[in-house]
Each structure stands twice: as structure tokens, then as C-alpha cells.
Amino acid sequence: MTIRILWEFFAAALGTMAFALLFHVPRKYYPICGLIGGCGWVCYKILLCWCSAPIATFFANVAVVFLSRFFAVRKSCPVTLFLVSGIFPLVPGAGIYWTAYYMVTNELDLAGQKGFQTLKIAVAIVLSILLVFELPQSLFSIRRKEKTSSLS
Image 1 (cartoon, one colour):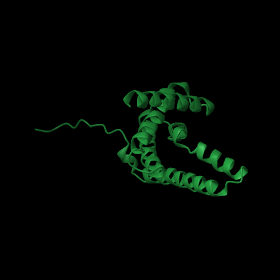
Image 2 (image 1 turned 180 degrees about the vertical axis):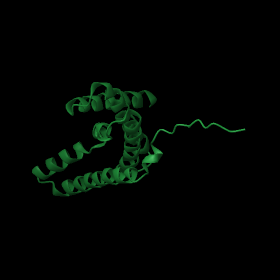
Image 3 (image 1 turned 120 degrees about the vertical axis):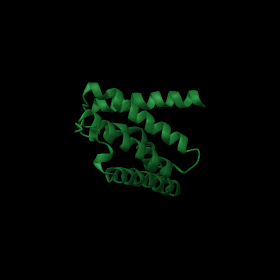
């Protein structure tokens, strides 16, 4: 199981870096984008053992958005640089595909089920982004201790 999770982490990280390349993210940020996407995917896979796909997606995406904000502050760049790429493994593209497939093949019950699940996952992604962006910026800022001179 751990070897499989490790391979999935690397696959998600590589896919995320490829997506970052498509969105013209500067090359020096590829490893961070890959790390964020891989961590999000591993969170999703682990949480999927205990809860449904929309809930697992919500919490995995909270981790992705949190890491994106953290690295954006550390590297002094826009958060969307990491967020758009890092969210890539969690987007329900297969759900959209199967919904369309079931509609074309006239299996409307399956299309409705898959479409509703895909919609719940999409809403979970949006809500997790909103939740983390409501956290104060000071939570992500670099705190530096100022040297104060003491008068004795």
C-alpha cells in the first residue's frame, strides 16, 4: 500500500508539474507545484478510505490551498501560481467524462448519479478554497523577531 501511495504521489506531482508548464509557471516553481499537487492527491487517497469522494476532496483541497498560500507568501509570488496547478489532480475530469458518456449512451440514471457526484466534488473544491482564503494573511506571513535593545 505504501509503495502504491508513493507512486501515486510521484505521478500526481509529475502531472501537476506538466500542468504548471502549460500555464507558463516559472521553471523555478515546478518542484513546489509538484509537491503541492502530490500532497493533495495523497491526502485525497488516504481520506477516501474513511469518507466519501466529495468530503475527501474538500479536505485534500484544504491542504492544497493552505500549502499554496504558504508557499506564495514564502516565495513572494501570487497564490494562483501554485493553486491552479496544485488543484489539477483533484479536479473531477473523469466524472465529467462519464456523465457525458452516460448521457450519449442514453443511460440517464447513471448520468444523473455521476453528474450529481461530480457537482458535489466541484462544490467541495470551491468551498475549500473559500474557507482557506478566509484565514487571515498573518497566519501565512513570515514572522521575524525584531531585535530590541534593552536599557539597563
